[in-house]
Amino acid sequence: MTGGNRFVTRGGALGTSRCLLLSRRPLPDTGQGAETPRTPRGRLIRVTVKPATLPGGTWTSGDLTVARFGYGAMQLAGPWAMGPPADRDGALAVLREVADLGITHIDTSAAYGPAITNQLIREALQPYPDGLHIATKVGANRDEQGGWPPARQPNELRRQVGENLETLGLDVLDLVNLRLGDAEGTVPGSIAEAFETLADLQREGVIRHLGVSNATAEQVAEAQQIAPIVCVQNMYNLAHRHDDALIDRLARENIAYVPFFPLGGFNPLQSSALSAVATRLNTTPMAVALAWLLQRSPNILLIPGTSSVAHLRENVAGAAIALSAADLAALDGIAE
Ligand SMILES: NC(=O)c1ccc[n+]([C@@H]2O[C@H](COP(=O)([O-])OP(=O)(O)OC[C@H]3O[C@@H](n4cnc5c(N)ncnc54)[C@H](OP(=O)(O)O)[C@@H]3O)[C@@H](O)[C@H]2O)c1
Image 1 (cartoon, rainbow, N blue to C red):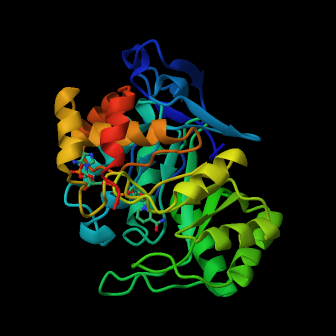
Image 2 (image 1 turned 45 degrees about the vertical axis):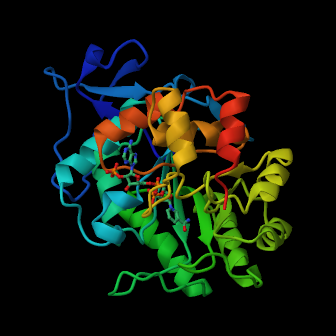
């Protein structure tokens, strides 16, 4: 969906879960000096990923199907999502591992870096694997202090959509969230002018699907009066459960709920109850936090962030754990 297939040279080394097809389609110039990967005979190999092998299976709405276990790319840039990563090759390796694991939902924004995270995604993954969906956000700029000043005038939103298209190397964005509120959280108020601008861009053909982020329940409803949405991306985790009612409503409407900061974000989740459950199950608190989200509701899609291949693998493996009724009751007590 996101503009093509990914070609790699690793052939059968990828294992039986991948379908390898030969093609002569070249990699486009990413502007990053990346070499075109080829087999020894110069042929390119397309990888088709199998999202059903990831914990949580898949979620479908209309023509959109994604693995429920996705990846949040924000923390691939420098500290506080500003500037380049300390380990650029490591960041590219994480993104390639994301695709190799069969993850089909990557969350990003041209505001991360700014531009740097999108450029890394493009360099690591273009031509993009079949079925990969890259979700972006518009609605905020970055200032020199790393702040996120709102930028939701129609011309500002159009510029940010253009920046995402350019830095990701795409003609169409799969999913664009209108990011609302501010760094402190949601801020009530009408979103009509901003969301109508994104609906116009959807009609113009540069956006396939729309969503809202950092939104109140009223703003979600207002967006739905203007155009269909496929997701809401808000802050939510074991300790921060203000959206419980909204999640249940969206589940009834088959709209995805995508929690950001699923592991606590810049302030990692810490709780004696969480640690106790993790110890009892012989796993990590991160694994329990992710498994809890997958079990919380079938419309929850995960986008945990990491800049480490080892943590990524650990999180994918760990999120498959089944939590018992007793575990869930213990974890319910963590909420603020
Ligand atoms: N819509 C919005 O306004 C908004 C706001 C914030 C974020 N987001 C999106 O949500 C995504 C997720 O949020 P996030 O990445 O900020 O926070 P997060 O997923 O809650 O946590 C990421 C942090 O957890 C650490 N971590 C991950 N796995 C670990 C493991 N197995 N062991 C130890 N530490 C681990 C990471 O460090 P390591 O790098 O060391 O693994 C990183 O510091 C973002 O990437 C972004 O795409 C959206």
